[in-house]
Image 1 (cartoon, helix red, strand yellow):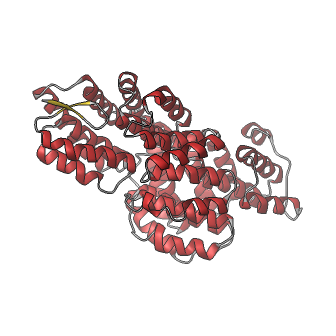
Image 2 (spheres, rainbow, N blue to C red; image 1 turned 135 degrees about the horizontal axis):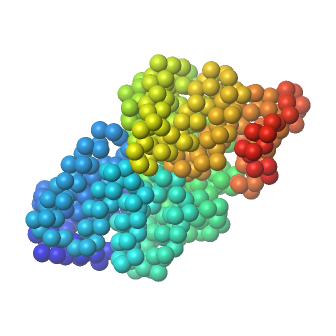
Image 3 (tube, helix red, strand yellow; image 1 turned 180 degrees about the vertical axis):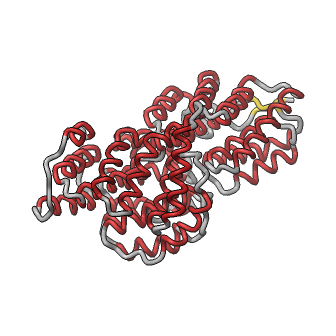
Length: 463
């Protein structure tokens, strides 16, 4: 038996009752809902041989970038293949199975291409649309996000059930491309159509971060808790954005309160939650704010993730926690495991990224911890041209940009720090609070300086 899901895509089912929780799974995935896993579980209870359901279980597991979940994903893939052999599936569903297999084989880029094959024939498939963006996000492929969405835009008129979520994804891709006005307008319109779209809401928050409008950002997010209170741990990331806005305004006590009461209200070891927390603490320490013993809790969790090596972005934030707590033994173990990725890449795309730029950035983090600022600068500047490929957004990776600038300033590399700040200001089109304060330091002539050497000049595009 086949039936159409809420997006009008044919799915291979044997019991019509399973379509209700399956549609809830689709809506939940688009909205980052905490209920998504439960809805998928309910679907598979009714429909235990639903190949696409098992495939999504595998894909959702891999999105979490946890080593132990690779086994879960592999089991889901094996089950999906077995089910599709016993009960033939549609071509669309088989492409999802191919995507999961490719990712398990270390090639998430091929998984993206499988999603693009789906969208080429079924552009209205919002599950593929969202999955393509989610994997591209982990690969740092902002331009690919935009191209994918703009190829399918005609399928998402306002009568499409996912039109608001599509606009939220498009707004984020536009923001990452520097199209700030269009991103803001698109995100606002999307939220009108999908009031529970935390992704679209946060895309507009990204615009305010990148354009230096923290007060406008707080006004935008204020009173819209219904858009993220239903979320999985993505809700902590929205609070992270609010904390960054207060940080830019110099409201450090408010940042610490948000950290304790919202960002780390649950002491999870999900890499996204660790990234939220570590990047806030590091930014605060750049401003000479005493963060107390908050690094310790993060480091204790990170010490158990030193062997993950699933995603450079995750490894670097685990390392940030370990360096923040001066846990040298666990940090050395993590960096050693990253070096093993360099030695044994075997065609694995994520291992290649961990090898470079991940390893250079990791060495920079360790050198900064040891107050060897010139060494930190040289490692970070080597990583910098390709840092986008570790994944995440411009706002998330900005902590590494600040780290590079801090290293240059503290090493007495005034010309290099100036070039980095000029380039950062040019990209954002303004000077935010961080930039203004660093220009004051550089213009005060109170710091030592040396003439940049050829390696420095080759590493920086002078604005």
